Image 1 (cartoon, rainbow, N blue to C red):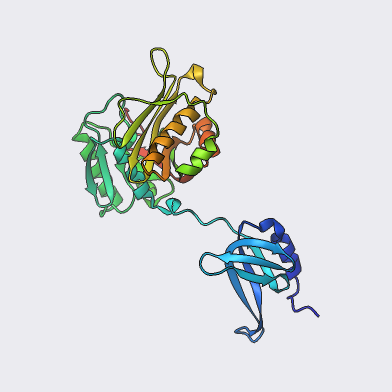
Image 2 (image 1 turned 180 degrees about the vertical axis):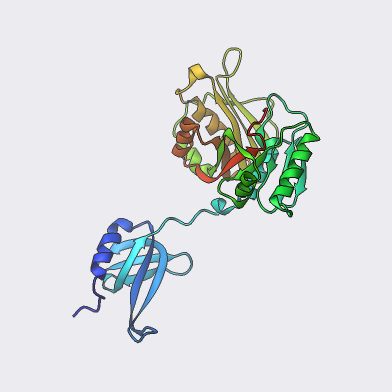
Length: 317
C-alpha cells in the first residue's frame, strides 16, 4: 500500500513535473519515519529552484544550503512560484525616484519630512515635472492637508505651479485626492529598471550609427545618430553610482522604425557599462504604448508607477 496521502497524485500531476525544471517551486513532502503535531504523518515545505526531475526523484536547490533530493513518492503537493524579485527591484520607491535628481543638477530642494520639494530655477527649454514637483513619497511629518498647503506656498514663492509626484495607490495619493488635488492628464509614468548586461543582450545586433557627443561629461553622456541639420535620434544618460538613468530618448518622426532607438540605447548602455553601471532605469509614460513595448523587449521591468497631482489638475510645463 502506498504511503502517499489520498489525492496527492492529482495535485502533483497538475502542478509539478519535468516542466518545472529551472523554475522556482514550493514542494510539500512527507517526512518518513516522523510524526506530525496531530499524531499523523509529518510534512515539511521546501522553497527553491527545481534542478532536475526524473528517475523517481526531483532535486530542489533552496536559496541557501545544499540541494535537496526528494523522492517523487514523498511529494504531497507543490506548485511553481514567481521568481524572487531581484535586489534592484526591492529598492524602495523613494530611493529609486531620488536617482532622478542627478539628471537636473541645478535643482533646488527642501525636505518636508520624507517628502522632497524640487524646483529647477533655470530650466533649459520646458519645465520637467520631475525637477519641478514635490516627491510626495513617505511621511511628511504632518497631516497630508497641512503638507499640501505647504507645497502650494513653497511653489508659489518660486512662481511655479504646485505639483506632487506620488506613487499610484499609495496612502499619500489617497490623502491628496481627498484634499481636492487632481491628476494631470498624461500624468502617469512607470519607473522601469533592469540589468545593464541583460538589457544590452536584449537589444540584439545594431547598426552602430550612434556616437557619443562632445558635450558628454564624466557622469553624463549625450548620444546621437548624426543627421543633416539635427540628429536623426538622440538620448541621454546619467551615472549615479552603479545606476544608469536613461532619459530624453528621441527619434525624428520620419526616421522611426529603423532601429535607431536601439542604436542609441546600445551606445548609452555601453558607455555606462564601461564605467561600472549595473542597473539601467528610466521613466516612460503609461500611455506611450510603443515605448513600453520597446522597453518590454529589452527586459526593463516595471518597478513602480507614479502619478502627478496638482490642486488645479494642470501644470504649465
